[in-house]
Amino acid sequence: MPKRGNTSSLLDKMRARLSSGHFRMFNEKLYTSSGEYAFDYFKNDPNLFYVYHTGYQGQMSHWPEQPVNVIINWLKSHSASWTVADFGCGNAAVAKNVENKVFSIDLVSDDPSVIACDMAHTPLEPSSIDVAIFCLSLMGINYPSYLEEANRVLKPSGWLVIAEVRSRLDPNNGSADPEKLSKAIIELGFSLVSKDVKNKMFILFYFRKKEKSNGGKEHRLAPVEAVLVQTAMSRLSRIH
View 1 (cartoon, one colour):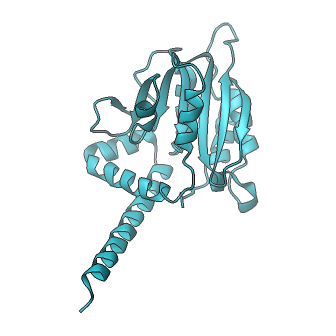
View 2 (view 1 turned 45 degrees about the vertical axis):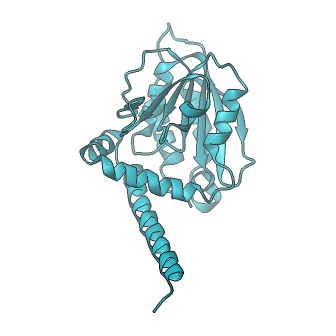
């Protein structure tokens, strides 16, 4: 008979393996479906979204540093008066750790402070946000529309902060080219202020929205630019 401690350890490993398997399945669904489909999918069964985030947290626990903590520290080093939109907020870690007013946005949540919606269509007012964050959340076949939505709600000179898995932005392994991604976002109406490549697991981009031009019209991704963003980020990647 196996010892109780060994049995418990084996069960924990089996649960972890099952959780990891569910995470990969849902992760792939999020990368390969539209935001509208994902919103409806998880809205119909919110428990699936919680299973996904449990697996996500398990995967992230193996990272030596988490990008959300870098972003939180960056926010703390700037003005607490800034209003923030956290697109794909997960457990709303940003809102829980800064003094800023934060609109936490995700597909599903049992937290009343989180706005549950398709990130391409938020209820936020135009030009009302100082910082828009996408922390490992540019997922789905229509994520260029998420960037357009961030552009819509950001004030002129507002910040767009993007954290992305490094393996998803490595042209040497057949993945996307981070330079093309940056170029596409610049064409959307931003300037690249800095890029943090120190971490081995993720890359951080810090953009600022340019002042309005063309008679005050908002910038939008033209068809060619939208293809460029899709090309730059379309490779399916798994957090590991």
